[in-house]
Image 1 (cartoon, rainbow, N blue to C red):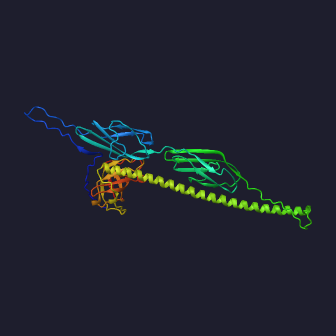
Image 2: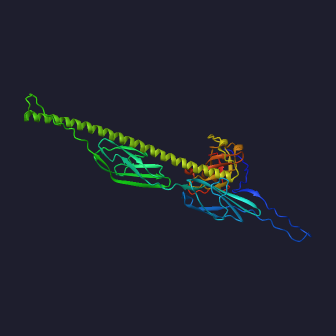
Image 3: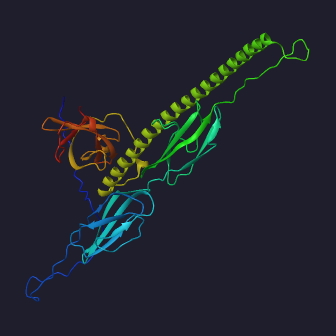
Length: 400
């Protein structure tokens, strides 16, 4: 094992972006020229908070200025480039669901300064109101009932056709075949990202048994104008009973097949719904990670265009770099670490480096952004040492 000396190229990357500098005051005379000098005012530093960060459409969000040295304020509540308010501590009502960036630009005689919070405000739709109808509501066993959703603001539906606490369908307008005669209470739970609502219709569906198929056969076998005697009648009843049993058996078989088909479809729909939920959660997590990464890169004055990023999982040549900056993750995103090595040192996106301090293991990062002389990586949560705190001046290496 041989030592490798790496020169740390430290790049200053301010967290706030100064958009314009102005108001440079005249210099004072140092001797014999009037006896007085004017001081140059300092630039303001923009900062703010908001509450609540998650709100329903139509509810207000209170923004609180935390800037230093500001005498003027411009608020852009959706980062569309158009200021919506010029007060110091404004309140704003969002009219559409979504995730919003917020920008505050402050000013004084020395110039202006801007603070951008990406993906800062989450606006959810109002909770749904569940409602439905069915047709027919009285039917014969084996017939189908069509349920029609009439809910407002709903994006997902859960139907319980017999009020047993188990969801039977997640379609918006399902059809259902009941497997037994009786009176049924139906429950619909409608939901969206803002909440859910339940509509219960008690004793709503009546399922009647099928009509009797018994046939009374009067037989005059000797064609004497009279029905056959009691013995003949008894034989006819035996035949009728046999026919009825066969018919009942056919109906039971048909019913069992229909019930099994409904259960199979319900299992398939339930499984698809689970996979959809997992995919949606993964997608939302990726959105949060992406927003955190873009905010971090923007705060460092680095480009955020992912088209120029090439993933390479091959390990770089062994090197040791220095941790230059750390940024905690926001809303479940991974912690970000900036190191003093880049593509000039053989690093590329996808490389993993080990973090250590005085031979003490701290964790690992996976590179997500690389320039010639610096790189940014996300801390891998499962590989971070327990109670480890990553600090500026720690080391990062590809040796391990």
